[in-house]
Image 1 (cartoon, rainbow, N blue to C red):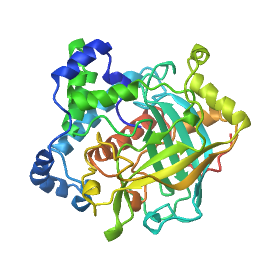
Image 2: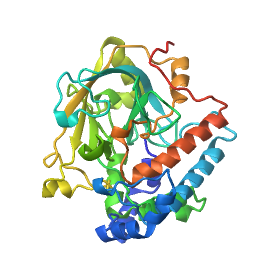
Image 3: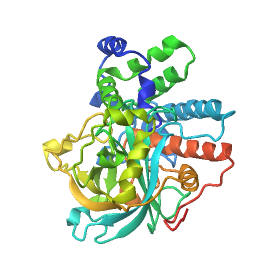
Length: 400
């Protein structure tokens, strides 16, 4: 769940997009630009107790990162106010269309490698989870037959111990999209993109892909073109890195969720007659069968040259499985259930998902996650305020 819609980045025909891509420079920054940012921005960051950089694990601030983050937050807040002020309830800025929000069981493996036993990954641990599946586009009425990024957000409950955010004391969130990488790294380019998309001038909106560069434009186009038959048959990735462990044993990881069984995920033309066919597909499956996912993690081994080259800041670059393979650490069981009722939908829409609902052993890493820390909390507070809703922390014992 990211703070931009993949579809909104490309409001132009594919031919025009191709022309823009030929005119742009590559969106991946050089190593020297990030290091230079660390030298110029670190003293400012140290003055802000809410901003942390773990240089040993590979985190380095981007040029003017904090100012760009605050500007991004303000622009998106204004967008949400304008969009929903006279059209309540206020929905999420992106991922507003939920295909289903289901109660699940997160079961950690009965055997784990020692290097993976950190945080919530304790042998034989079981947690209840609320899982929300969604489209990424900012339009909640967009038909499912259109290509789009798909989201899977997991909230585990009954998690003891210290948390990174004070608003929830017993949860751990995992947020994923249906693509292994994100489309932008640099907060300044992120800000340029948000500014272009929020501008009422058509030419400014059409220039939005220029902010991404060739690499980012290709990634966003791939995300935006995906069509699926069922969210339960789809693989999802964190796309951005997280910490595994603490102290001298900490490592960088990414995670992924893969269906236990490979089922045909190609949508049929007959499904397209229903603008909300992804919800219908979930309902049909869960009315008669359980759903199952494998929860996988990959960790970066800095002891090898290939592992050390994997970046926590350049989230447009995939951590190839040939370099750092995925290992299954848990299984998610979504039991057969009836989830499509107004009370359960309202409950789930009032939940807040953020990667910073986390134990310290799974601290989010990198610039995109640092932006999310500020933007996600702000937007959740704004949405709850506009809707006159008191934030809730779920337990998994809710009944509807």
